[in-house]
Amino acid sequence: MLSAWDRRDRPPEEVAAAGLQGFAMDKTFLSSVKGILLETELDFLRCVSAIIIFLVVSFAAVTSREGAAIAAFVFGIILVSVFAYDAFKIYQTEMAPRATQGDQQ
Image (cartoon, rainbow, N blue to C red):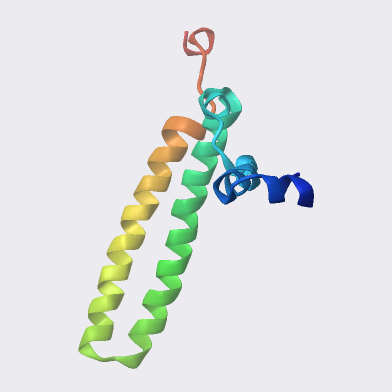
């Protein structure tokens, strides 16, 4: 971390860049196995949280029984099905344990 003396002697751009150094993306980490798994898990959690949010909002909207609310409910259910399919495909292709060649024979 920079001390007060270091901040005084440096231009403001360098101080701001040094303060944000910990938030930089590490390309080697993202291409490693742990980085790929983290990205997959976050993508899966994004789908699951979107499903929950859209279900709650859709059922809250349909309680008013107006035409626009029913249209919002139908649109929300369509979005829930799209996100559920996306979560299923993510789980099936990237998170499910794969059978090895020896197990298939």
